[in-house]
Amino acid sequence: SMLQRLAATLRRPAAVPLAAAVRCISSGSVDITVPLNYWAGKRWTSKEKCNKENVYEPATGRVLCHLEPCGAVEVDEAVEAAKSAFGHWSKMSGMERARIMIEAAHIIESRREEIAEMEVVNNGKSITEARLDVDSARLCIEYYAGLASTLAGQHVQLPGGSFAYTRREPLGVCVGIGAWNYPFQIAAWKSAPALACGNSMVFKPSPVTPVTAVMLAEIYAEAGAPEGLLNVVQGGQETGSLLCHHPDVAKVSFTGSVPTGKKIMEMASKGVKPVTLELGGKSPLLIFQDSDLENAVRGALMANFLSQGQVCSNGTRVFVQKNILPEFVEEVVKRTRAIEIGDPLLESTRMGALVNQPHLEKVLSFVDQAKKEGATVLLPCILLANTINDLNTMTCVKEEIFGPVMSVLSFETEEEVLQRANNTTMGLAAGVFTRDVMRAHRVVEHLKAGSCFINNYNITPVEVPFGGFKMSGIGRENGQVTVEHYSQLKTVFVEMGDVDCLF
Ligand SMILES: NC(=O)c1ccc[n+]([C@@H]2O[C@H](COP(=O)([O-])OP(=O)(O)OC[C@H]3O[C@@H](n4cnc5c(N)ncnc54)[C@H](O)[C@@H]3O)[C@@H](O)[C@H]2O)c1
Ligand SMILES: C[N+](C)(C)CCCC=O
Image 1 (spheres, rainbow, N blue to C red):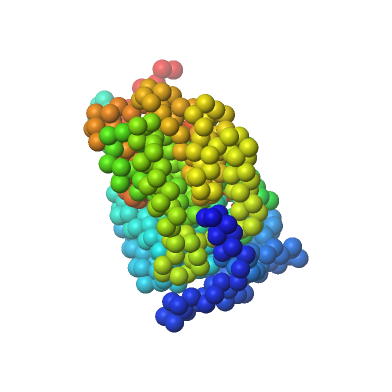
Image 2 (cartoon, rainbow, N blue to C red):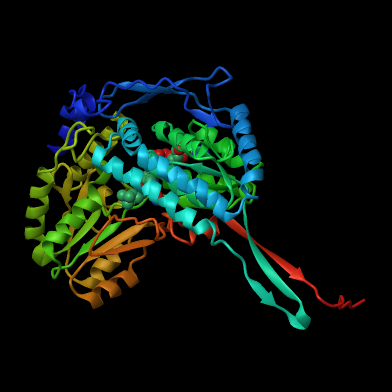
């Protein structure tokens, strides 16, 4: 079965891939010994005695490196480095900042393969996907470099020749906290808009995937950024909490689960700090009987199996109109069976390893639970929900599984499916497949989700905003609007006459 094959991929020492002849590394061959903390332009080992944690290679289960979690002293040093960089960076013009960011993008392009390989080794996703993640990171930096010189205020005329103007100013030291599913991409999606607006950043990757964010920090430095512009502190919730509470931190941008997002918001509220929260989802994908079935099936696969299903925006509740359910199920099962699962560094692999053994077990337990609750298991990764009890009572329909598990549900009418699709506390994304253009826009208007796709799913061009409704988040990443989340407006009043004094 698909999940058993995934499990096997996770447990066995991977064979040396054929592509190793042209590749520098192969699964099971990498040991990372360089320090992974980075601030003030240098990699650092922990000064204090700290409990080192193992970091695993998902494809083999081998220990890849050791994580040295940062305590209060290290967090202070990293924030201090970011404060010092902010002093220089915030005084540079947008054009000057853009030049350095574009140079960073060029370096990423030239090191694409190396970064993608490290992402695979640390995260377990296929090399094909990892390359696209690196491209997305680069494009994001290019996009915000383009916006850096366009940041401007307004001039407002007032009576008597007086006037006011607004200045768009940076916030200061921003904190980024990342999840493990898109380690390099998340670091870029957070740092690029922050830096374009003139801020500096301290970034904390997930302790599960600490490797590639440091590469990004070094790339900015190599591109000419001042020392301390992007700093990386490693650690888990204690380190994250130190960052959120730090008095010199102006803003926290977080990507992760809803429960952690709530804690981040609470901690940031103590200092009245703005937050951006990119949280989880349980997104619906609606497939109407007039859809182009081939594209709808492709859409459902893209909505569920990228990054081994470990994607926040995944459309894991696939609602299919009753008349086409048999055809849809046949085709989606056939194509899912054909997905090439294996060593994530092989060119032919389309699905690699889940991030670690405990997560694999959690995903499998959702499948077991679904069986107990009456789902028909078409493949371990495709659950056909029983029409009587699928009305958001089954666990697999209610909770974010964050693995390659698609729940297929049937529906009869547009009104009914909209009610069921919106019956969730989350609202990250949603999709609709139909050839009826009126229906497409009508449905999208009623879907309560931050990113809606018509006749496609899970594309995230960096030029357009991405983020959630309801408990899926606050604020947006990407697109022009994100400038609002990394800057603040100062209004300046200029009096050209006498003070009109009432006293
Ligand atoms: N909306 C999005 O853009 C998006 C993108 C990717 C992942 N996600 C979500 O992320 C989740 C999976 O990632 P995860 O398991 O790494 O999430 P998580 O919430 O467990 O951890 C995310 C980050 O928060 C840190 N953290 C944990 N507790 C903390 C605390 N008390 N204070 C400060 N930091 C703390 C972790 O160390 C990690 O760096 C899923 O729910 C997924 O949907 C959302
Ligand atoms: C690029 N994807 C696949 C849309 C992922 C967006 C980030 C969410 O996990």
